[in-house]
Length: 141
Length: 200
Image 1 (cartoon, chains in turn brown, green):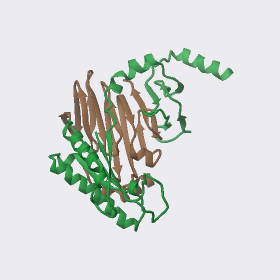
Image 2 (cartoon, rainbow over the protein chains, first blue to last red):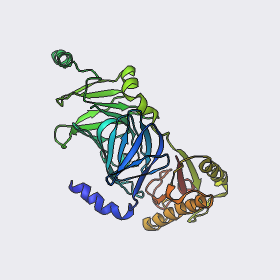
Image 3 (cartoon, chains in turn brown, orange):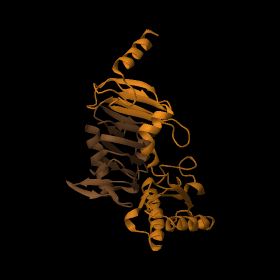
């Protein structure tokens, strides 16, 4: 926790962007919960920190992030980006995703390449540190 | 051997298949064939880390939280992860532009690549461009950080002039931290004086 705070303090001045990624493709019902509002997702939409990605039973969505990581959510998913800090000069940062339910595919990017375990995924049972690069997570009902 | 039998009994006893598992994790080979790794601890960060580092290695977590390591079959991959794998955005296309010494001018040799970059960004929908500037090792780190950033900003400006939306172009400089051709300090190297552009 202490080092996460340290990273935040060092990296924040250069990562003042609200946008952390972009919706690249989608099908079926996909929405984003942002500040307690539900917004329908659209191709090209920018993704912000703390957005919760929600898909319906036929929904799926592909998102790219600023550290060049790529991410997809399958049907019936609820996935939140709880932390995203990226210094584009040093590539230091942290990227934490929480999967409440559904499926997630990730290809990690520059954050995980620069610092193994700086990218993490939290599931109801586990906390995953990512050392590279392509993996899948499913959380059942 | 005894442990394996015990493990099999546990699997049979719980009726734990991929379908019955509460959670599934699978490690896949990267697009270039190399294998990464995952380190797994309990949700609260406690417990001894379990490492997954083989292609198609699969961890199943039952509703009680027990973890079992196995391998993912093609059938499981299709059934559980077919839809999500189809939705993964394609990797970006990378362009490299080279620059004149201590300058933000793109070299004559890179003009072709620049035209190809423009064609690529104008031909795409929901396009996003990551622009990263670099320098060789001649000069101070601070100076090179600024030069790298200015090179990236220059490419960004050129993309803006072609009508690309500003919020989808992200420019940054890495100075001399990420050499394409490794050299000692204070070494002029044309291939390190570059901007890498990822279009995705």
